[in-house]
Image (cartoon, rainbow over all chains, first blue to last red; front, side, top):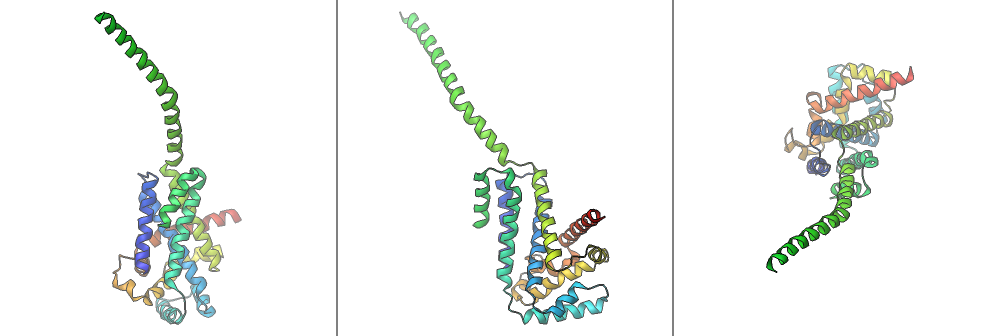
Length: 124
Length: 144
């Protein structure tokens, strides 16, 4: 389930912080990592939407009124309900990608042993 | 004899202590230095980790902008400034959540999809939007 996967994602972040002996800036760092997941997952879903006309509407929202926006949401529901997107798999992939990318960002400043330890944490 | 042995014992202990101390310096000190060296390498400054997380977010914003075709910085900035982008980015999550009933049953504060539903009201997407805006401004500056 996606909800459980998200919980696991948050737990992994906490474990990484613990392994890095991080004491300060935790909230801001966590926010950046979760926001990264937000964008990663959104991009993945947007890429999986097959309906080009709907995608085009998402990309050009300047003239949308509040009512138009609600109509767009309803249309989106139909588009995605009718699609065969595997949300769970997409979400899990995004979680793994973001955590691995975060470690890759830190990697140049870590020993290989520490990098391996961090990667083991997120693989659990 | 007994005193002599006592003196001898004291000297022996002093010598022994000297040997122990020297040995400790030879064997333990380098180990401590190695451990300290390793410790310093793995204990990153919180600011450095924060910068890495910002870099990660910037990269994901960049990929989002490029992959979704929203790669016109001026238009994107316009949308963000009108707050429309917040709603637009929420759409796929809202619709995704609507096809996964379990996400609703967990309540609004648990789970990422539920978070997406309240995108316009939560700090996280606003934070993400601010970062997107900052990123787009950076692109704008580079292009000028």
